[in-house]
Image (cartoon, rainbow, N blue to C red):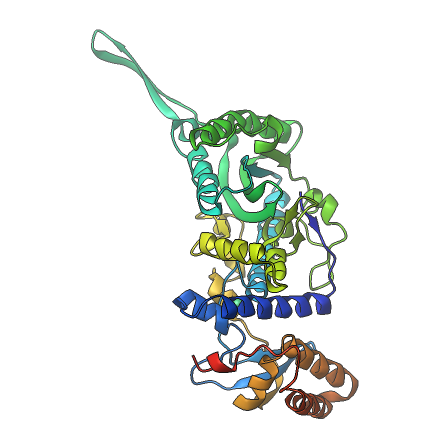
Length: 417
Ligand SMILES: [Zn+2]
């Protein structure tokens, strides 16, 4: 399991905004022609939304943010959007898991991996994992089959043979895809939370865990072999754990705090791939991006491959009907990733920024974080007028050193693209 690094709120934001700048820089350097998705990525948090004004806003909690900007909504490659989307999904998963356990029912946490080697392309590996899992959950082994007894051409008996689905009392799942890069190359894997309509009491949960392990380990190995991969190690291809509390799986997560400062359990483990820094042997995607931005040509290629292979794929999915079963629909309608990413700070105060000012801020890697931090500090000390004064001084400073700022991004030429 990956380690998760501890981040304070400010460190987290600074890093996310900085990484997004880097991602956009890498794109800027790498190619001239952009697809629609790339244009969105390039413009995330940078380009003004049509018919709107860029604003610096302060929310009720004293947190600053920008409004009126385009947002890319990429859960895979945009550090800022990924954080927003994953935090939202982690909350939903926790909520669902809590409701399920409160009802005394069983939750299993399954991790599926396949053997891989350096040099293997990510896209087909990813496809193997996703399709393989789809196959585990289809066909007669899963859904059951009808048997019949025929004598002299007459059906004398017919019965339904249970599939794994029936035996488990399967009610639904949340599936999360993750990708890391390590010594053995790309490592796409799935985390799946299985919601089972059976009591978690006594030995039942353990029996259900063993059942999934027994049934799936063999099938999974077969699927890997059929896809031309090596046979997964018995203990690593399919890993099944019982979730006994939302924090149960989180032994390695205990030092992690979310943005509200509270420990979160299973939702984070499933959804916050953006928090995980790869193990000794692996790099998380945003670490690959970081190395790419620092000039590693190898990592620039890997990052480009990762972007292509993940494009259009869902990162976190709930099975149909699960939200309603867990009472999530009572908390509000389901929202897609783009909508989650577009949520803006509800402003108690707002300062419109003219295009030139905004441009100066964005032209500096990390410039946006500097403005937000300055606004928050001054606002906490002496209120809104002081915050406006502080950021205006910072704008002047940024403009003054703009021409020879070593952190200048040189986005100017693409600005109105
Ligand atoms: Zn974005």
